[in-house]
Image (cartoon, rainbow, N blue to C red):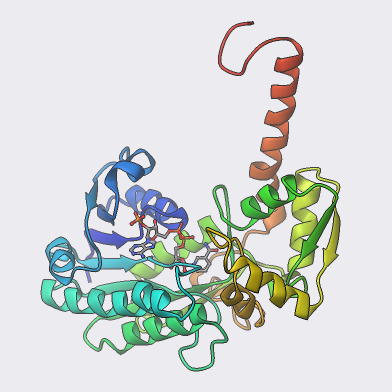
Length: 326
Ligand SMILES: NC(=O)c1ccc[n+]([C@@H]2O[C@H](COP(=O)([O-])OP(=O)(O)OC[C@H]3O[C@@H](n4cnc5c(N)ncnc54)[C@H](OP(=O)(O)O)[C@@H]3O)[C@@H](O)[C@H]2O)c1
């Protein structure tokens, strides 16, 4: 099937920005829907043939309108935490939106759907609201008979601007001395953002991927403790990292449920009770050699250390970062 134009939901986020860049290189016309155009315009507006459109993606009529004329739709919308705690927010953002996306594809005639899910997503057996709702949304997408659907199930994704290494780096910086770590034994196979979007770009035009659920992992498996120690090493933060026993991890999550912005939650804790690693890595079948994190993470984490050194030198020599000596 020939694909010329693509509508992307969630295209302003970490994955979406890289994916839009990757697809723009292939010359597709891109229509990115966002809830707030003004907030996101600087990230995407410079790409050729990209329209950034403010829309309510939860409104079926607006979805059908914006999908019309598009050959493919990519749904990247996802949340890691909800406002409440009963799963309704996850079901709204994942399951209900997937239903509306499928209905709008049918109405508008878009026939190819790429759906972003997550490793361990499972409607029945997922341990958290996040994983169950991701699983239910993925199942819905694959049950939409007449659509050609491929879903993507990555482990945690790393790259400049990620919310994993950058978040731990920020937490380490603001926690002097002892760093208590919940879920320290949880295992991950972090996958590079450029490998993820390359997989999506290749799958888009590869009929062999129709109907498939692709697991995406990096080349190595690490415990969370190893990843946090590596982050501390990269940013040169000497911290005593103390793995919390399970009951304290759960308690920390229960307390953080009530902290604004939920830096960690009971639902996150439950997601971490299953290892985020691939039995079969589908990057291989797409001809992509997974990139080790050691080749990438220092570039964006340690870069900040170097910049901090420059800033210290500037301030010692009575110069500011932007201008002449002060
Ligand atoms: N990052 C990872 O490590 C990782 C790992 C596994 C799976 N995933 C999945 O990959 C997808 C993209 O992740 P990401 O890291 O790029 O996330 P992100 O940076 O948070 O971006 C998600 C995008 O979805 C939109 N969005 C968020 N909440 C929404 C809501 N309630 N209603 C409508 N739109 C909403 C936002 O767009 P606007 O603000 O412009 O509307 C946002 O730009 C998600 O489905 C996520 O579950 C990510």
